[in-house]
Length: 123
Image 1 (cartoon, rainbow, N blue to C red):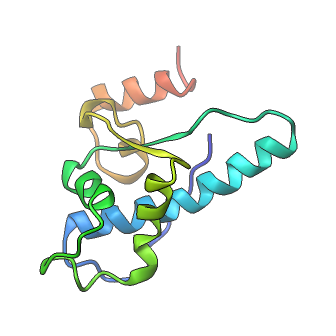
Image 2: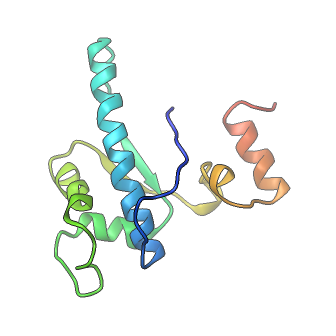
Image 3: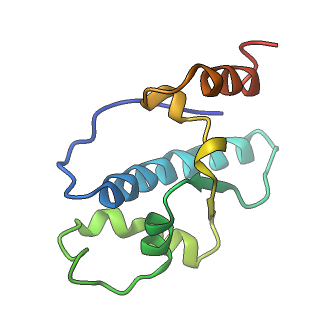
């Protein structure tokens, strides 16, 4: 497991754009981790990146540029190539199962306990 929390270097015009940029950044980390595991002779199956926003997944899988997304910098469309080439898969995860929310959002005590238990902090 790998994680990082930092401010994005761009000002996103929508939540979809913000998540799309974050997904692209996560893909770069995922590629590095995949290569690292390969060097340790622990080659993995095609890794999955989970995202709880359907519009971000649709944008990543659909390389057609739309009026509403044409302002997104070309470098963030790197994820298109990775998905097309089968380097990774982008999978929808229900918001209630998204464990990263505890690191980035205000969550209820119930979700905090669920997330803490799931990552091995409690239980």
